[in-house]
Length: 299
Image 1 (tube, rainbow, N blue to C red):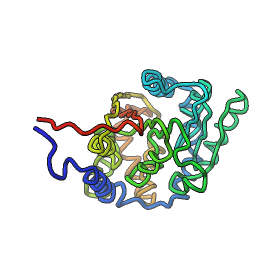
Image 2: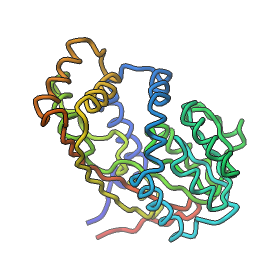
Image 3: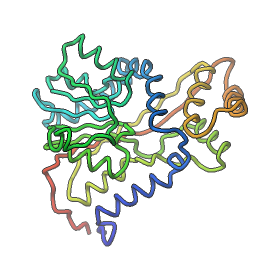
Image 4: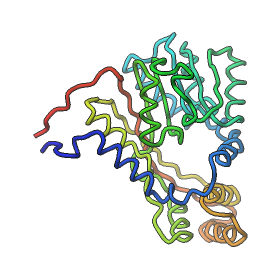
């Protein structure tokens, strides 16, 4: 069997990615502006900063470092662009390896934590407050400027246009992380179906789209998967707050909506504790922008 016709064309996968993103329930029903979503990230910065220092944060960091080390892309002096850097999940560890990091992040509070950590450790990190969509590569002098460009689980690189620009900033390597396959837990799925009478769908930025674009373009990226299963006993009020924060992006949190979410959680709780089980998979993809091979004819 071999890829034939439009399946063998890179444009097919870019167009399918854009169509999937545009028609996704998560895209169609988004109610908040970019500025409102950035304000949400500002509010969540303290909890994200704690996660950087926690076990899950260290696990994610180690997975990326392992890939970079294996591929010879963890060298002191390398110039790195970290898109959607957050509170420094990767910017901090890469700078500790002797890399010169430019951390791009639109959230003021995320950058506040990152800048403070970099100052305390005297790390070579330059922070830039901006969305990736706003960046002009030529005006910034960023076109093919960086040895490594990294984007991990960020809404900054979530469609064909932002992905292609992501590649254009690199002169050597790229590393991209995104969800791979289903990502939603039962609570999100069932409440979404209740509010909107449709399924929530998958991630409109699933890693399958950029992977197949790269493959049909002649690249042979390294792709690893990391599955995470979480089963946690969480206070009921914390679960309600998290679900309200998620659905706020798609509808007004009226008293009726609040009541529905609270009733859903309490009916499935044991006393004041909700047992939240979540399972999802991340794809970690690495490639070199100059290494393009002729796609094989697969029989």
